[in-house]
Length: 200
Image 1 (spheres, one colour):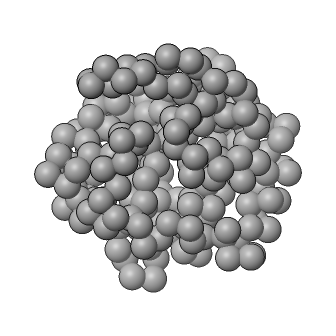
Image 2 (tube, rainbow, N blue to C red):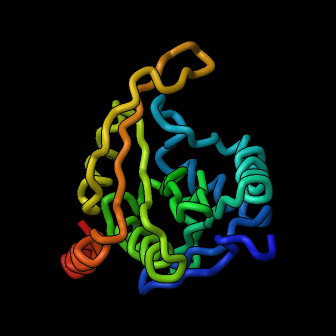
């Protein structure tokens, strides 16, 4: 992976540390996703605990083959692993990427964890990697995710109708958001403001 635009890095804030995803994280991630049984939400792509190994292997393969950058989310005070997130669909020539595959244990949802994670990740993208745009995509029916993305300061680009089809044959409408480099200073200020108010 030497010479790639995105390479493994550890990002630390006051609440969380984002560590490069490793196979050793599999048991802790399986435990985290069991909190709230978040894999049961039909509009998400979170693996159940007994398939977390496959989930991690797929993320690591995407890193090796396509330049993705997956992270494990760890709480700094307790050391507990509470979720994961990823840069992927990396377009090095145009300095664009997507930020997604993000999920958290229920106990840290609606806290400042996601806000600080996004501040760390977007700071890395725009300030360290000179990105021109970071994209977010989510299922039309995942209203919680859509609201969270908009609260960050991302703008909705559009909806890809019948974008993908699930193994059960159900079509997904995908909502696309993005933040561009010229918007980053205002988005950064908003994220810091949200963290000062508890992250909500």
